[in-house]
Image: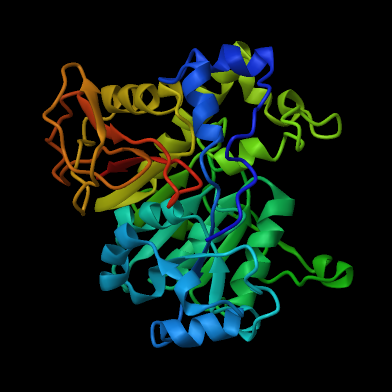
Length: 383
């Protein structure tokens, strides 16, 4: 098991964060308890032929310390490259030949669920908006052809490095440095850009191309910018060992979305990203919208607003069974309890026929983070 330094630790949440929590389903006490939950380390093993004994040997851990995350096995049954394992902190991941070959990949289990929700076919061409730093992008590239867009050059460079380490350049048709709210095949394409300063000068600006007109992608993943409050690992890093926010890494400084005014801006950004992703979706395609925030304003309200203006979109069920002990919520009235899997998710979707309309009802399952999930994702499926 991974060593945990968060259990029992007291986190001194600043006033700005306490105010932000009023926009989520959790009280300060409940969220504090989430932060104190055990923190684990996970990897994705891309080579399906490797046995547990071989993986353990190469990561220099005992085979009993290598535990496959049970609820992700359903994804690996259909897509064998999506196996996820919990590993101890002592695992020598970067020193392993599996890392050099790109066969071991750091990933949170909940990220696999976003890819599993999209469930692409090998012949599909998928677009990921907000694709950096590339965790889900590389998962998708193992399953189909993918194009990525992100507005952050530094993070997009990391994504490109991950693609090249995993030898997935043939599957990734482009990494575009552009605003996902308006992207149409324009901007800078970074896949052809090298990792050295000299090579970076070779980045080419490409004009708009007709290939990225509306109705071109079989699937779209909108991994929207969010407040990250559902990513407990992300929040914990802003606290020192005493549970105080670091002077060098102020929580408020690194989470500008905490203020009410910024939250409004964020919700508008998320809405525009979702709308653009849907515009680029083929008839009969599927779009997944996900965040790692508990805020309903960044999830249900964004989707509700989208459904109100887009008559072709309709809710669609998840392609897997739910896990145990969920907290079931819906709008406007509650649905019967379901068995569930993820720490948190919201699903939408619909049929491909243009005459279909949305009921405006959003049903989802929200679960507390467990030892199998460091991040918490809300996942919407729109067809």
